[in-house]
Length: 407
Image 1 (cartoon, rainbow, N blue to C red):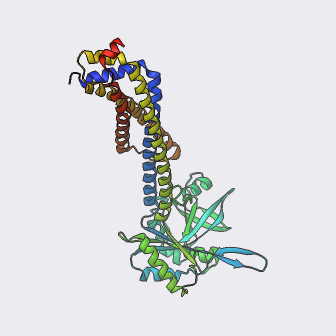
Image 2: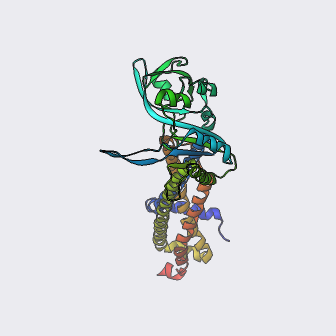
C-alpha cells in the first residue's frame, strides 16, 4: 500500500475543512439518528432503573387484593360501590391455607380531613395491621410503629407520612401530639421517611396509618375490609400466586362459575408491564425515526461524495499518474465518507448525552449511560459511511489519467 492510513485521514479531514458547509449538511442526518438512539437508550435505562428502585421501595413480591366495584340500583339513583364481601376471616384463611404467602396485611382505606390547631389537610387514612411497615419497606425518621397490642386494644394512635408531618407540624416534633381525624383525637407516635408516589401514582407521604381494629371500630364502625397486601415468598411466581389466590377466594366465597369476581388482584409487575409497554412503543418509534435519519444521512453522504469526486477529477488523475492504484482511490474516498459519518456519530453522542442529563434531571430519573448504546451507534455510523461511499469511490476509479489530464 503506497499511502498510509494516516495520509488518508489527513486528506479526508482537509477535504472536510475545505467543504465544511456541504459536509455539515451530510452529517446532520447521522447526528440526529445517533442522538435519538443514544438519548432514548439512556433515558429508557434510567426509567427501568427507577421502576426497579420503586418496586424495592414499596414492597417486593407484592400482590394486592382489593374489593371490586359492584353496581347498586337504588330507588332514585344507580351507582357503583365497593363490595363488602372481604372479611378478616378471609385473610386468616388465605394466610393459613394458601402456599407461598410470606406475609399478609388486611386494610381499609378512605380519605378524611386531618386537623392540627388551625391547619387542615386531606389525607388518605389506612387502617392496617402492623406488618404493613415490613411489607412496604416503610422506615421511620422518628417515633415508633404501632403494635399488635395497640391493635387489640383499639388504641387511637397513628404513624404519619412525611407530608403530613411537614404540612401540619412544620417539621417540628409531632410525637405525642394529637391530630383530629374526622373529629376524633388521634395521637401521633411515628413519622415515616419520605417515599414519594408509588407506581400507581398514590402519594405515599400523605398517608396516615393506624391499627386496623381501631379504624374499623372507632372511626368507621364496619365489619369488612377493602383488601389486603400479600407478600409472596421469594421464588414464587406472582402470576401463579394471582391465579391460585383468585381460585381460593372464589371457593371460600362460594361463588358460582357464572358469577363475576367481587374482588380484583394485581401486582406491581402488572403496573410495571404497562409502563414497559409504553417504553417499548416509544422505543419502536425511536428506532423507526433513527432508521429514517440514518437513511437520510447516508443519502446525504452519498450525494456529497459523488459531487466531490466529479469536482476532483484532476486530483484523481494526478494520483493515478504518480502510481496510485484503483484500490488506493477507493480507500481514500471510503475513508472520507466514513470520517464524515463518524464525526456525525460523535456529535450525535455528545448531543444525546446532554439530552440524557436534561431529561433525567427534569424527570427526576437516575442518570444512566450505557456504553453499549454508544458502541452500537458508532458501528452503525461507520457501516452507513462505508455503504454510502462505496459507489462514489468505485466511480472515481473509472476516470482514466490521460482523459482527465488532457481532456
